[in-house]
Amino acid sequence: MAQSEQEILEGLAEIVNEETGLDTESVQSEKSFTDDLDIDSLSMMTIVVNAEEKFGVRIPDDEVKNLKTVGDAVSFIAKNQS
Amino acid sequence: MTAERRVVVTGLGATTPVGGTVPETWDAILAGRSGARTMPFDWVEKYDLPVKFAATLRTPAEEVLSKVEIRRMDPSAQFALIAAREAWADAGMPEGDPERLAACIGTGIGGVWTLLSQWDNLREKGPRRVFPLSVPMLMPNASSAAVSLEIGARAGAHTPVSACASGLEAMGYAYDMIRAGRADIAVAGGTEGAVHALPIAGFAAMQALSTRNDEPEKASRPYDTGRDGFVLGEGAAVVVVEEYERAKARGAKIYAEIAGVGMSSDSHHIAAPEPEGAGASRAMVEAVHRAGLSPKDIVHINAHATSTPVGDVAESNAIRRAFGDDTDGMPVSATKSMTGHLLGAAGALEGVLTILALKNRLAPATINLDDFDPAIRLDVVHGEARKLPEGDIAGLNNSFGFGGHNVAVVFTSV
Image (spheres, each protein chain N blue to C red):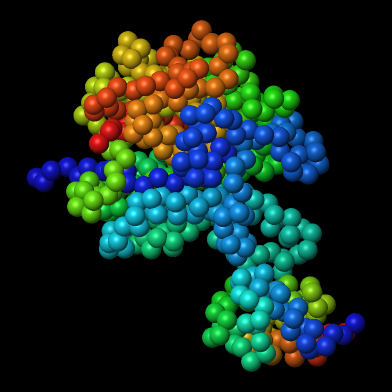
């Protein structure tokens, strides 16, 4: 069942919090994973895999580099959820 | 030639089955409290382990570290970091050139929890679900790397691996680094987080563990005729070691001096100690010799004494072989009777306890010694702690490991 972008954002914020310890409130659409949230490539892979499981989507490895901001990830997940 | 560089201990840290810090641990040791307890984990019944108890940490790492630190480090590295933070703070967080600062943390087994949990992930969920930090978490040098990151050590991060001698060998390595001029200060010790079904099953299969399941706190009983194996423990112990003139110049609190280190290998058997103790005695003699002392100067021994039927006698023979009749003047403490056997952290923890015994002039009592084994020819402290003499005193700590590794360190009062 597809979720709203707001629901996806909240779910993603929980995953980021679990992985990095960042407050869920700091995970906002316009934030860059690397520049604003200081998430390195290894943490990003963990977040991607956890997001795949949580949202029932497949995020191919060569797509990950296009997910620059939290909003990019939310849009990708929303678009690809069945 | 310039005078030899002396190496002193200026900070202590530990998280152990009897205490979450060094002061808590020492208090428990003087009170004779055991850290062995029945394991509450579901996997004990699930795998029908023959041993149902262990000496688990008194203060779980989850109560001390952040959620992210727990997630990104194997238990072995978590414990090392907790002990290193305490030791570093205890030393007053000494400032100085990072390129003269080293980290030496030994471990016997390394990241066994990570290795096996990620193996489960691979088999059950596939390669994409293997945690990206798996390899840097399971590697045995993860703990020395974590400590070097924590304190900013750039002179070197080293990981001596010699089974149950690792922690003391790491202290010896740091001592050598400072003596050789490769560093001025180091954080050194050992860690182990291997209270896991597989090592327990493995040690049990070789009949190394006590199976006194109904009385865990009585299971570790070095030198007692009823001993039937060691009690697996977990935790970490770490010291800050420092070049003496530097420590004095900054007004550091000095616990003791590392006066001499001796090491040898048996080349006898992969697991059994050489029964006459030739290798172990050579390590002890070398440590005393390098300290510039004679056996009569040693007023206390913290023995390896794991509570195995064979090992305790072999060490007793080795001590006699090294020191002859002078052995009679050396009160021996077997603190594993309380802490259990922390494998790669054991030698480091017992190093800390030897230092505290000298500092407090008290040799701790060995617990569970109800029926002294006549094959043991040592003056074992039991019943109550033994007062050590005033003035300059020296203590010896022994640590031996599967593979025939022997390490002995002489500490002196300062």
